[in-house]
Amino acid sequence: MKKGYWFIILSAFLFSTMEIVLKMVSNQFNPIQISFLRFFIGSIMLLPLALKNLKGKKLSLNRNDYSFFILTGFICVVVSMTFYQLAIFYCKASIVAVLFSCNPIFVVTFAFFLIGEKLYKHTIVTMVLSIIGMICILNPFNMTISLQGIIFIAISTITFALYSVICNKKSERFGGVVLTCFSFLMGSIEMLVLMLITKISFISQLLSDSGLKEFSNIPILHGITLSNIPMLAYISIFVTGLGYTFYILAMEETSASTASIVFFIKPALAPILALIILKEAITVNIMIGIAFIIIGSIINFRGNNKLARNTINEIEDDELKDRKSVV
Image 1 (tube, one colour):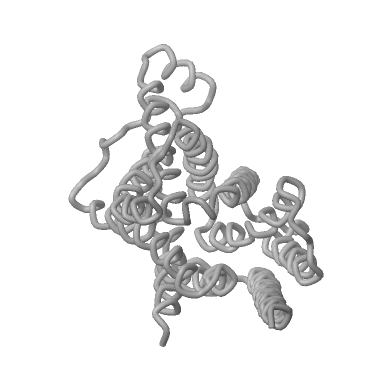
Image 2 (cartoon, rainbow, N blue to C red):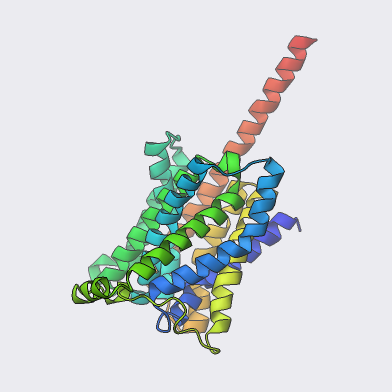
């Protein structure tokens, strides 16, 4: 088996366990605290590979680059992942996993409006099927999912899609490892600053009185015990650090469209793992919703592969014409 496919399998498995482990520690850590810890440790894991890539490209970061990473770090880590962790607290891990996997819908929308990417037929079909799948999972006629949780996962998914599209502008220059590492690092530093601000007595009291207890006097290391260190290490080192590394390496070894297989393995695998580990039931409407999302993902994958092949053929034809014209 090609090395790239091993990276896909490893990242898909690690990403599929993410919500489960976060759910298991949700009552032991503040949601902002766990987001800070996992992204800070994860970015440190990625740093050697990122620095190696920068050296290989003969690049050095300037003030504008750091400003860019401060922006992407804020959108991804501070905003998206904070609401993501809150969603896990209020919803089933399997629901969050499946709905978050639909973020490509919003990526396509932002890419169309912000950077002028084309909308293809297979993309529109994928979006429609994914939306139908989400409606089936949410089951609006008999909704049992927390409204707060739905709002939180919506904010998290939309802002993560925005982060992805913004990063796309710099992907050719930096590459995925550098973008991910420095966005995570800057975002976790920003989160640390905000956490320290919440410890100021009058701000802490104000947040607490406003009903925002989760954002008041946020702990940094408090709550870490010998019993939860293994799970903290797993979510930080394996899921956040190695998971993203394997996914980026999968894109480099195969292609972006092939690596996207991860995001239609996850909606199928995560609920099964949640059933086994957390005993979260998979209802009929959830199974139907997952089926729609997976079918949409497969259509998108096949459509992207076809586009990639057509592009390669066009390039080869142009090169052949150029050679003939020279002769």
